[in-house]
Length: 103
Image 1 (cartoon, helix red, strand yellow):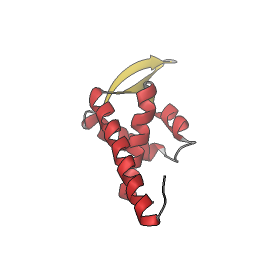
Image 2 (cartoon, rainbow, N blue to C red):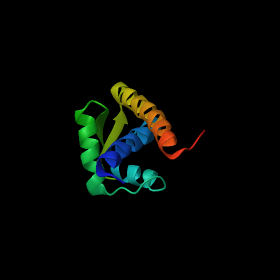
Image 3 (cartoon, helix red, strand yellow):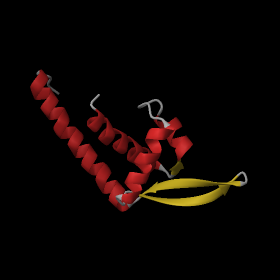
């Protein structure tokens, strides 16, 4: 898959998982494993970028004696997730036309 296309797909996957509940890095990787392969070295820059773009907020909480960073989707992140869904509808239409696949 094209790297740029995969980047957007990974962002959409992370936002979709976080739209259900807040989570932390390791759990996100586990939740995504059946959908798409993602490593820690890929996930954390995505989380940082989504946070910088106002799509996520973070809060640190103690867990078993150490601090764990939890990520939660923001209103802006929910809007971005809707944009990804609309993009999917358009891409599906385009691919359908290109490859002669009807709904």
